[in-house]
Image 1 (spheres, each protein chain N blue to C red):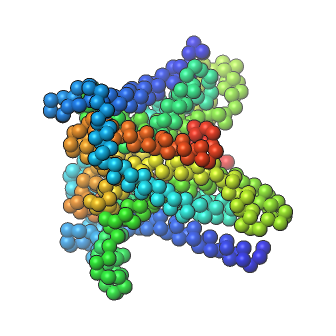
Image 2 (cartoon, rainbow over the protein chains, first blue to last red):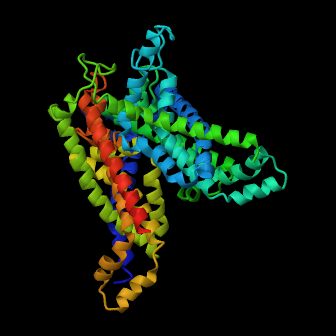
Image 3 (cartoon, rainbow over the protein chains, first blue to last red):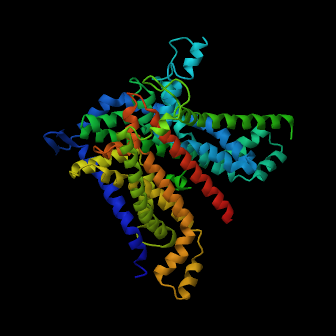
Length: 283
Length: 262
């Protein structure tokens, strides 16, 4: 009986993960190779043409998503690293308060936060309307429905996921190591570049992983802030699935997106010299 | 310390506050416009203070239904997730068994799969199996994406436990169940609670996965996205403000309680 305990404990979760995570992936793989339509039904024809069709039609949106996701990730890294650095080394007794303030947006729903940006950035809203009223901005100035709005929204929404892991890795750096470097005549910049930065790379790695994937696949920012000219792959997959009921194309697109993201993660892991992605992500 | 160092620190300090202000500004806007006495259809310019939307909070019946759906779905999926996730967290943190590596991989895969792909694949499953989409399929999906978070938080707590405590309980004649209830569960409780709060928050906030598996059931985030084109009524701001307030109070209460325990 005692030897069975772990299996009994794991059984319900195993079943859940098998039926609702593994089987659906297989179902999606199968659907992506079928042809037909929602009314007459779909039949398995092993037609890889779904993939070439989908890519042919939507490569623009796929490339745009990777570009937007990448730009947002770089922006988050540049904006977030100094914040994580300051809280970790200079936060003192108030560290938890600063972290709490960084996490504050998570108490508001993702959708509502994005809509609030829509409010704030509205062409004649509280920000630009006021500035236009003072004559500080031209009347046709607008940010909504531009690349800046979407990338800015993505940067805003996922920033805490970048700051937290970097903070965790910086927090573990012993300040005495930095002092030692300075005692050995390293400049402040030198000590940072040669000591602090390398020690924080696992955090940077985890942060990029936690932000790039969801930012690239996010449909909400493009839908609420992007207007019609900034459609991302997430919006296309949603429309193909839910409006056009074109399940084969949508499945092929989802798989392509996941494959591209996985390949990206592995190349990135190699480049950073992280041997085991799983291990780095678990840390 | 040189004067330059101190100046650098001050600049970084100010910069950190600037980022915090940036992160909080949409929250401030949300709260503020819940008090906006708007007369026109759009709620984007300030037109005076009112408490009207607080008294008329439940006047939009389908919005109220959506909020209630979200709360019920979050409660039910949290209960399921916490029970099965705690079990798996215990198994992974305490026991050696066959398939542990695969289990760890699945837990990681469930966290790292993009929500969009998860929603799409679940819809593929439900379509292939002719499963009607309703609140049940939403609950199934929410349990799936919350499960790993509960497993991870509980496992982190379990590995810090001293196994000799449980041995002592058994030596003193406690049954397996008694040991679990009186020794193991209380000591992993902070992990379980953290996991529960996380899965409730993830569930009530989810738009992407839900949009694939909802059928005709509408949740709070889905209703809001649906209303973007016609204009968000101030009641949404009020509900968001109340959820924000309750969440912050729980988090602060939790932190205070944790400080008192140590």
